[in-house]
Each structure stands twice: as C-alpha cells, then as structure tokens.
Amino acid sequence: MKVKARVQLRKNAKNKMLKDLESAFGEEMADLENKTLEKVTLDEYSLILVEGRPLLFEIEGTLFPTVRGALEMGLQKRLVVVDKGAIRFVSNGADIMAPGILEADPEIKEGDLVIIVEETHRKPLAIGKALMEGQQMVDADSGKAIKSITYVGDKLWNFEL
Image (cartoon, rainbow, N blue to C red; front, side, top):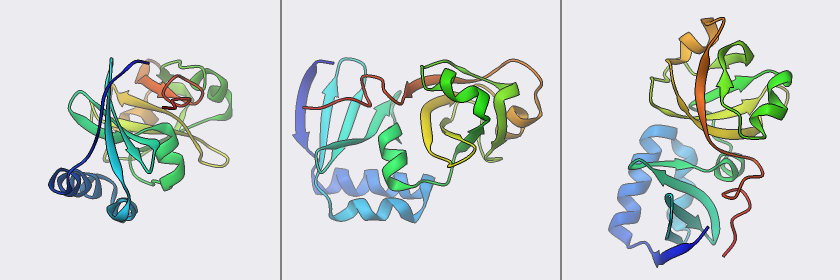
C-alpha cells in the first residue's frame, strides 16, 4: 500500500470524528481523546493512526474501526457472530453467507459496516458491509449476508509505516 499523505489531525477535526464514533459505538471511543491521531491517505482509503497504530479507516466517507481497532478497543456494537465452520473462510477474506451467522446486532441496517467476530472468544475476524438487516442475517437460510472489506492477516492488518 502506497502512502500518499500523512498528517496529524487538528483538534476540531479530531473532536468531530470522536463525537461521530461515540454516537456509533458508545463510551469505548472516549479513550481516544487523549491520544495522537494521524490521517494517512492511501490508494484505496484513508487510515487513522492512533499512537502510530492503524485502528480506524475511512471508506466511502464513513469512519470505522479496522479489525485491529475492533480487537484493541473491545467494541460491542455492530457485531455479527459467525460459527466455527466459517472462521477459516472469513479469515481468508471470503464474504459471509447467512447460514454461518449465529447472531447479529438487531440495529444493523443494510449498507452498514459491521464487525464479524467468532463465536467462542468473540474476537474480530473481519470488517464488512451488511447486504441485509441484522435480523434477516440470522433468519435467512441462504445467500450472501456481508461483503468482506478487510480481514485478519490482509494488507491493512499488516500495515506499518
């Protein structure tokens, strides 16, 4: 991934961003207030580095935690839980099929970004875009429920400056 630009966020931009994130995820985001945030512009999207670590990224104008960010911040909203059989596919970047989904946040709307976690330890495996509402994901017997965007072990996971 080629870095096009890297700048430290100004206080007003940082505060607006934190406010948006807190409304989506709650108090877990308040911890970012006293940390250094930098915006790194890449070919595909922008990354927000928190103390030098890629914990957030911007895609289609929406700011969302990376897989590493979801893991480190222990987020509990917008989660989709997949069964053990789906883990190896999700970890390799496959889209998530409805039959592999055990639970989904009922507040998820079609088009929302979501965090895909495994059932046993609830560790994040991937970030994806919902192709149906949360309850539909659980109820559906077939079909693609989530389009995978980034996953454990991909170039974003391994990103270093």
